[in-house]
Amino acid sequence: MISLVCFILMLNLSYDRDFVATAILPFVYFLLVYFCVGEKILSNGLGTFSLLIFYSFRMCILPVICALGNFYLEPNKSDYIDKYNTGILLTCFEAVIVFLSLFYFCNHNRKKNSFDEVPLKSNNKHLLLYSIVVFLTLFIIIVCFLYRISYFHFITEEAADVLLDDIKPVQKMHTMWYITDFACTLWRPLFSFVLIYLLLNRKNKRISYFMILLVASLNVMFMSDRRIFALLVGGFCFYYLMTLIENKIAKKYIQISIFACAICTVYYCFYGSMTTGLWLISRTFQHYFSGPTLTAMALEVNDRIGIQFFDFFKLLLNNFYLYIGSMGAFILPDYYSTIFGVGAWTPMVAGSMRYFGIFFPIVIVFVVRYIVNCDYKSQRTNDELYKMIYSYLAVTVSCYMIMYTVELIMYFILSNALIYRLLIRLDSGTIRLK
Image 1 (cartoon, rainbow, N blue to C red):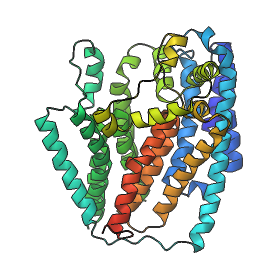
Image 2: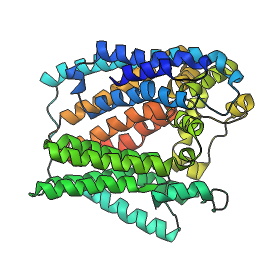
Image 3: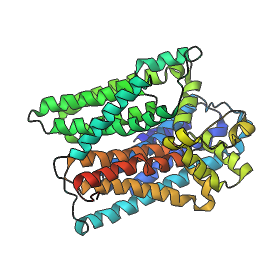
Image 4: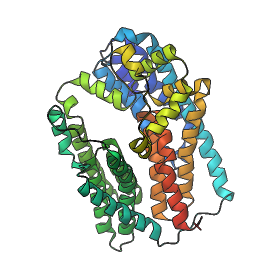
């Protein structure tokens, strides 16, 4: 229904006709859902389901938002419009690979689930995970106090930051800031999941569910220097709570809470756009969710610079904050500013083409397989804490596919996600340190 409504809107809204090819995105999404998605895939896991939702936003809702703002983005249209229709076709091709990969791996894991591995059992104590949470909590408090690092803030400060950008002091990102930032990205999800796990084991479920709702809300209300990450953790906690509750009235209260948090998020985090006009909303959402114009710009850059294989590894290392905090970052040319006069980031698939040429579909298939595998691991354990961690990894990578660059996705898989999965193995006794 969403895809068809958006398709009709794209045919009837008034916007620059040079962008009319964008209207095929919701229709292609409709066809892919109709032919590739069934009840078995929808029930495969939270990551699989969220991937469908995120691509629904990117291919259906985002084009409508862009059309309302007449596809505004800073560069001159003449600099990238020749590549725009190609970018739309590339987005469709990406979606085809994603959905076919999803269909294949979900079916493969469903068969594998029936006879393969022994389910992962918990020791039910989680002493290692509890110890890690306590250690990270104390570490973050002490470091932020000693080094005067202001890392967390209330959501209302997001709007204030827009107004004070020209006069507020810039926080120096020294080595300890990078270490704190890395520790916080590990701590926030794990701390939230441990709290939820402890609350789920209480006898009074009503109070437990209310407290879990509070944990989810606080993740949204108290943000960090990585605001999208904070919102993602909070959104996942809401999402997971919805899967735990069967009572319809309770679900309604949760939905109301999610709606209220969403309104606060949109108002404060997009304050500058909300108070300016639809053209700036179009620009903001294109930057955050790899809008079609960004893909066209990336293809124009790719044509001019060719394949840059080693750039991927340099950018990947630049995301390891412990590395750049001590060794410094690699300096790469700003390809966008020299061509368009403004900077921009590269959507996942266009970046994969820049770094790996004709082998770029392998990257998409790998990421989809990773998401489905996390869902599979979540289903193979009866421990609620492990389920949360695996599902969180799957949902996060699904979100990153439409929001971040390919090297950031790989960085998350190789750093935070790898550490979480190692902690589960150690905590469950699957592997032991000698």
